[in-house]
Length: 498
Image 1 (cartoon, rainbow, N blue to C red):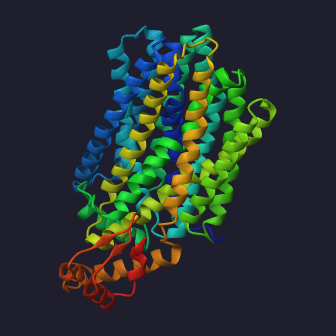
Image 2 (image 1 turned 90 degrees about the vertical axis):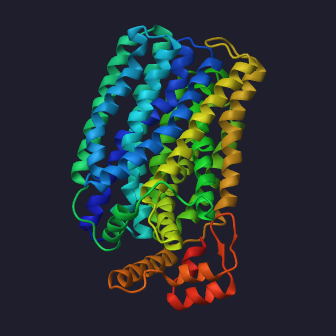
Image 3 (image 1 turned 90 degrees about the horizontal axis):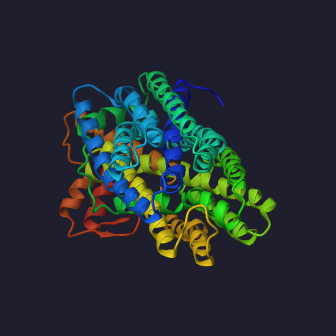
């Protein structure tokens, strides 16, 4: 394999996921436990607080998208936003973990700190994720850059599993709030440095199709995405499954390890096993992206996760085997956290082909809104469910509470994976079809720039057609007249079915 300048840009871009995962995944795994067991909030109250974060995410990502688009119109691109917003976000994260030391236990103070962090993070997350569509335009390369992203995220998860999570557990037992605050400050500093270096090193002019997408998105970007497009609906469902079901196992491990297996010391080991499995999964799925479509690999990953979850449920009474099951789950999770971003970048091209406008920031922001909101919804559901069942922090739990923990941590991800496998059967945009789509888009842009009629054959056909039928994940059924017009215009009609 020949290393190119674009490969260097992809790796530099992906390094930002180390910092992002360090703060967001760290908070995602520990914040509910911190609220309920460290700050002694009731589980139901903590659930309502996470619901406030959900509502905040719905607003923050959209505002961040609007801000990103407006700044791009005045020459401030994605990289500029990432670099400028890094330090404020780091301070917000540090404040969140300093709340116990500061004695800020009032509900409104905790809610404010959580919302400030989520808002500051959105200003970095939206432009950094949207930048992926410009780093490379090749479908196979997008699979690789998705793997690079997860590689850095998994390295960060290793730190979360071995340092941050045990520290939050220890703070609940020993009330060592000073170390918790110091760790939050150090983590925030590493995050800020990582994001600034990422923005600085992934620069340079993109080449080929990536250069075209950069030009197009800067002129046409918007958040008024076509919600009725079936591809957008499919992305929403994929985002829901990715945010709500896929991380449910990791978010529930603190409770399952502490109260079901009754081995709190085993939680760090299980998180480490999942992380090791993710490392192996990154290598496996990234290598396979050259030969299989991202949708097929994602379905495979969900199948692997189901096997691991079933094994975990069967081995609850045999703790030594749980680490092996956790590693298998990690292999499956690698595909779930890695491949949807590549599918999303390809979907931006499909939507551009259909609607003649590149909704780059808007689609990434929309996907992020659904992912983060559904993740916060799961945290809220966890708090409410445990509260209704009678969960008491630090005490032996009833059989009903233990069953609820297992249902949330094992049942939800299994059901989500089964739904995702069915959904992936409808995503049929492989590497070859995507390449034809890019060629068609380039030809259309060339005609527009040369002064030809800017309305493509596809658009003419749609205007003449009597209507369009839809399939779940993006198939667009045109009238016979529209199909004939489109096929005369260019040779890539098959590429838009997925």
